[in-house]
Length: 290
Image (cartoon, rainbow, N blue to C red; front, top):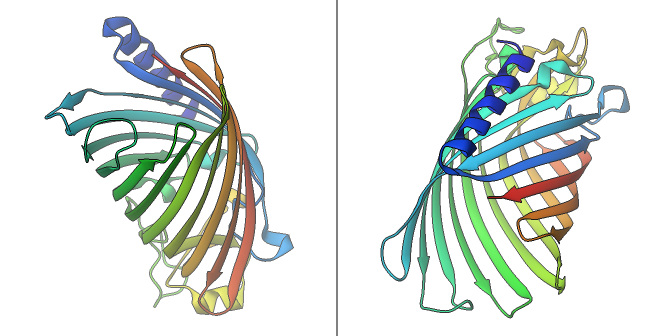
C-alpha cells in the first residue's frame, strides 16, 4: 500500500473513532524542517527536507487509587516528506503508562513508568520494523508557573528486512538499533496563555548515517547497507555514538482545547573513530484536545 492510501485509511479511521464515542483524545498537525536528515558530517552528504506529520491518539485512563492511575494509549502518525519519498511513513503504536502521585494537590511529585511498541512502515523497505521503548519519568510542579521533569529511556529498534551485504564480513541490518537516554526539562508559564519549554537529552547508542562511500565512517561502522533514498551510490552506516540534544519551544493556548507551538532543537553526535555531525530541527505544531 502506497503512502497516500495509508494516510487515507488513517484519516477515515480517526474520523470513525471520533464519531463513534468521542474516543479520540488528541489530534496533531506538525510541520518539521530537519537540516541534516542523513546525519552526515561532510557537506556533500548533508540533506535537509520539510515534512508534514498528522497524528492522533486515544485510549482510556483508569484511576486505581487516590494516588495511582493506569492509562493505555493507541496512536497513529503519518508523515509526508517534500523531496525524499522513501522517508514517508505511517506508524502505529500502543503505550501503557503507570503513574504514581506522592500525595494530594498540584505540587506533589509524580513518577511514571511507560512501555510502548510502535510499528514502523516506510516507503523504503529498509526502514520497516518495530520500535520498543521503556521510560521512567519523575516530575514536580514547583509553583503555579514552573514545572520540572527528568527521565531515563531505553529503546530497541528491530528491522523486518536484511538487505544484501555490501561487505561480506559486515552485517547489513543497519536499522537494528539500541540506545539509552537521560533527559531533563522545565516548563514555564510566562503569561496566562503562553508556555516556554526547555530541555536537554543525552543519548548513548546506535545512530545511522547515510553518505557516499566514506572510509572513516566505514571503519567505524558495525553495519552497512545500500540506501538509495538519498540518491545513487549512497550507503547507510550504523555506528555507536554519544549525542546531545538541546531544545526550546513556545506554545500558546488557542481557545479552551487547542494549542499552537514553535520549537527548535540542536543536536551534536560524536561517534567512535572521530566521526561527528551537527544538525538543527525546526517545528510548528498544532494540537487539538477532545
